[in-house]
Amino acid sequence: MYARGMTTRQISEQIEEIYPIVYIDAVHFSVRQDSIIRKLAAYAILGIDANGMKDVISLQIGENESSKYWLGVLNELKKQRS
Image 1 (spheres, rainbow, N blue to C red):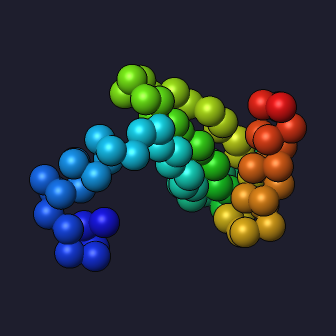
Image 2 (image 1 turned 60 degrees about the horizontal axis):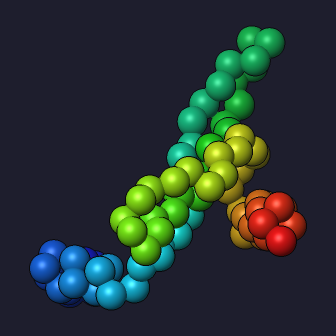
């Protein structure tokens, strides 16, 4: 929102109107395993409910970030919640 020109006040007002919110992101890091360095990603799904309470919905370690991997993560989450 900030990148699109909204002020921090406008962003705050917008977020107050649209609870709940789900954040989906991945953090990349290097791991040494058997003298080999590999790139991995920590996939995080965080939520904020209508009362403003934050919750870690999912945290997984996987290979390189891709839309195919995210689709699998979200489908798995959907199965668990239904």
